[in-house]
Image 1 (cartoon, rainbow, N blue to C red):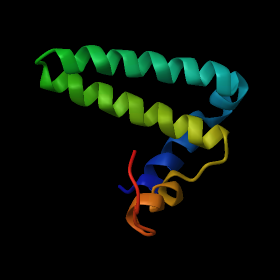
Image 2: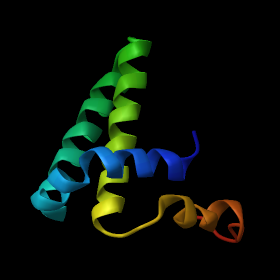
Image 3: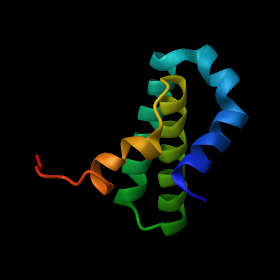
Length: 87
């Protein structure tokens, strides 16, 4: 499954509820998942790390969906156009 297929899967299954919640509420869920990922990274449970990475990615797709951002297109910043700079 590629990025756009996963983003579409998330849209088909969760868009109605997620769009009702809106960006601020959805962003709070995303941040909560990032916090859980942070905790998982501090531990040594590999399954939990995988699970939390998946949750963060799913919520990122949700945020992208309700803000009309195509993540596969967005990452072309790194993959197609190349990166001439870094922070």
